[in-house]
Length: 181
Image 1 (cartoon, rainbow, N blue to C red):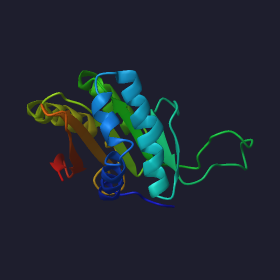
Image 2: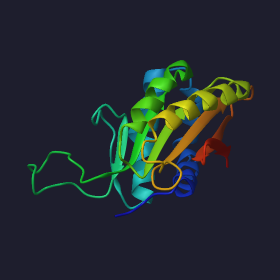
Image 3: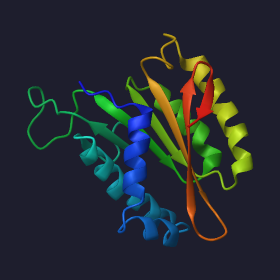
Image 4: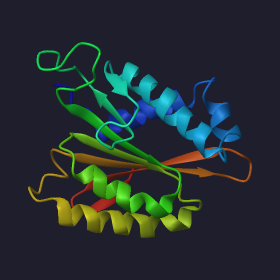
């Protein structure tokens, strides 16, 4: 079983997001949420999975936006279906940061070694408030006290600057708070 760390996911995310056929489209399609989401879930996530030596499914998977998995359960389910033996990375992508508390809550339901929320707060000054809300959600749902040791949470914020450059800011949940890395 491959366990993907937040650091490894960040490294692969950075590699993919900077690719020549991805990077310019991130900026040009920024305000076209449907197309933009298609780029993130339909192109970025599969390329990350490939770089990790895993597979991805980027359609609704038990209400998750995308999952990265190692292998399918082909013993209990017919060929051609996608039933992962386990979810290596559970991913939620939300363009509107106002509804990310719902997505963060949803991620806590899944037993996955890494859960990733990708969102866009608009301005960096909104991050602390969002992280505070996420922390409260995680504290109340961490029934086995293992969110810092066995089930990691990564939050990726994308912020577009005035010069049309997108800055990516990463936070990982450690102890009882999110730490920027």
